[in-house]
Image (cartoon, rainbow, N blue to C red; front, side):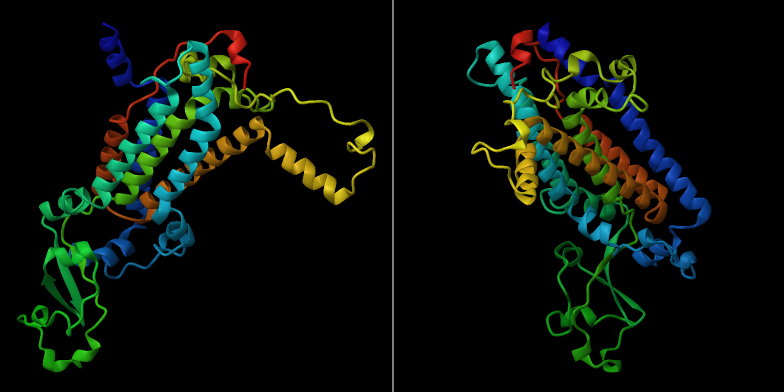
Length: 374
């Protein structure tokens, strides 16, 4: 009975999860609709696949920075988003989840974490999410799921040379290897392409591209998965963070509990300052001499950073910045890249991958005395 109840709880979406999925769906649908009305994706669609979108040949590139796939945020963040996600995950696991896990172990009297331990669940989620990322974007018993979808919908690998499109083996697109006449002379022996018209030494460093199929938006998939995954990691601690906001912008406790049930809150408030020993009077150090200004600032900064609640605040802030930047880049993807169908496919696969992840279950509440320990 307990396992059945646990299965029902884990399969049902919580209110905050419904809000998150609906928000991401709205970003994809509304952003893509706006892009279609403005024609802001036309330039990149033709650049990606002129065979499928010949009507966009005369489209001008939007003047905004984010329409350029080489923009710095795309290059430094989106292209390396799983590395940034791993960094954010590791920080929250050590700073936020580990103390919570230790508290529950002390309260239960068990020396080892159980299957429902918040840190164990977090690590398991990360492993499964990483596997989903690899399967969809890099490798799935050969080509990735994105590449397999592309090929199944009529896609093929082509090499564009001087206005001529040459079909080449799909493996060359998967390996992304540069092609030259010297290394692959047989590829250029096709009808409509006369090598006598070219200096063959100039036929080098050519990169084939996938053309003709449905190119599921890998960025949409990955950013959706990242946002939902990191939201699961930070959610148990968000109520404590919200309740520490200034009164003018602080949500009511009733609203917080309606979105994040009280049973899902972490068993301790990681942002609560731990008791500290009183400092020396009159700002003097232990020897009785007044420290220099530069030394005092440095020591105070190091002392602040060593406090658990400050580390928790910085970690939570970093995770929320990561989620916020991912949301922004998700919106930019909808406005300037891919077709609506390709972005919807990325959204669906991203949500399904997140749905398959193990979710936190309500832990047994430790006694109040244990909850104060940090």
